[in-house]
Amino acid sequence: MKLLGTPTSPYVRKVRLMLLEKNIPHEYLIDPPREPGSLVVRVNPLGRIPALILDDETCVFDSPVIAEYVDTLNDNPMLIPRDDALARMRVKRWEALADGIMDSAIAVRNERLRPEEKQEPGNITLHNKAIDRALDFASINLVNNTWVNGEKISLGDLALFSTLVYLDLRQPERDWRAAHPLLLAWYRRVAERPSAKISLAEQ
Ligand SMILES: N[C@@H](CCC(=O)N[C@@H](CS)C(=O)NCC(=O)O)C(=O)O
Image 1 (cartoon, rainbow, N blue to C red):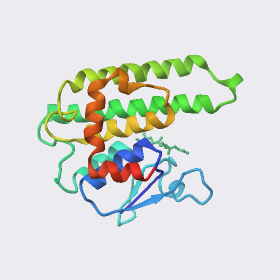
Image 2: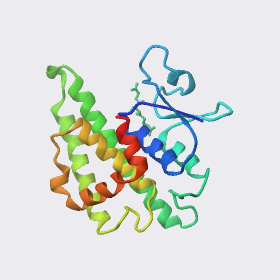
Image 3: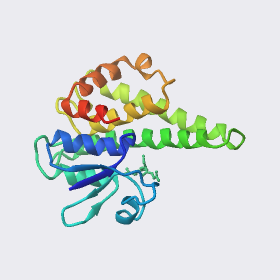
Image 4: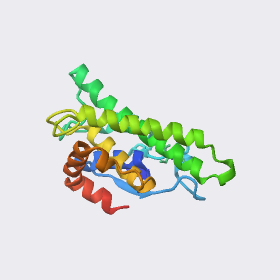
């Protein structure tokens, strides 16, 4: 299978980390969707990354759907609980929280890329406040757990890690480390994993 993406996209990083954690053979192709000749627009009608192309040419999008699919390919480790409905919901909720932060961080970036006189400060504030609340929520719900969902690493960890890497890239002025020491201790634990080291080296 082929994963189309870019090293800065947090949604792509989430999926790439899953494939690495689960040791699933794949080709990782850097393919910015707006570049002329991009394969992305030909395989994903939405023109977005990540796009996962299976061996029979089926294109899987978007990242939560890819994550669900990839997790069924093997159980080493199982990153989305299957039988325990509550545990499954919690992991998917961590993913939604992380994806929501990504959405807001991208909205802020897009706003800031506009000419200054056309920027809407209210929109930037709205999204930054959502990020603030979501990081508070993550800290509170992490408690002293090793991983976001307790004793086992899950998709929630990979999604939240990808989000924080993206925040460091696009909002370096945001000092989430000082504000959230529990999150920092957890982040360092994820960053030590071979999958994270590979992914960070690709930036
Ligand atoms: N909800 C989608 C979001 C994917 C997304 O928006 N990806 C961005 C890159 S971070 C993208 O492809 N944007 C289109 C573009 O850059 O033209 C997912 O989870 O896969």
